[in-house]
Amino acid sequence: DIVMTQSPDSLAVSLGERATINCKSSQTVFFSSNNKNYLAWYQQKPGQPPKLLIYWASTRESGVPDRFSGSGSGTDFTLTISSLQAEDVAVYFCHQYYSLPQSFGQGTKLEIK
Amino acid sequence: EVHLLESGGGLVQPGGSLRLSCEASGFTLSTYTMRWVRQAPGKGLEWISGICGKDDTTSYADSVKGRFTVSRDNSKNTLYLQMNSLRVEDTALYYCGRAQGASCYSVVDHWGQGKLVTVSS
Image (cartoon, rainbow over all chains, first blue to last red; front, side, top):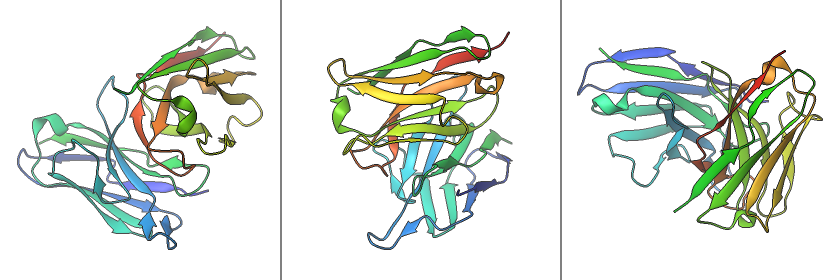
């Protein structure tokens, strides 16, 4: 089974500053046949279901602001919020859909400093 | 517009059964991969089951294998999760999700609001 580990567990960033969340998988989630990383990022606010932000490690979902970006390949990935807004306060999860059982990181709680 | 409406949760005693339903609208359920994910109170997300759009292959997490069964009724455009032999540790908010396509390896891009299942004596 692939274990997803995020860092840090929590993060406080000033408004307008950059926020960076890391995710490491215990095995590669890169499929060479189609050159894709089966890695997604979700945002979850209290009382709401997860919201898809990024898939294929770096493809932004439709309607997601361009301050959100994803990078990385293989086993190491990063979600970056280039300029933190108040509405970005949430828990962020990375997710691998490369193999079964699918798995999520433990979550990173993002707050305003 | 894609919409997923879960129903059927509630309080059940350990060892009991419940069936969750996820009524889909705005798309044809049979042509998409669907998943169930749960979230224990104050905890993270746990994938528990899926059914592939292209071939109806089902899959389960070890934590629920042999106790939970995923199925769908295409005539009702509804996804189900039959949960038997429920345990206290199954207490969670259960979300159904629609993946981006029929592939067994596509990411979920739409979620229901979730249904709470509480297992307690």
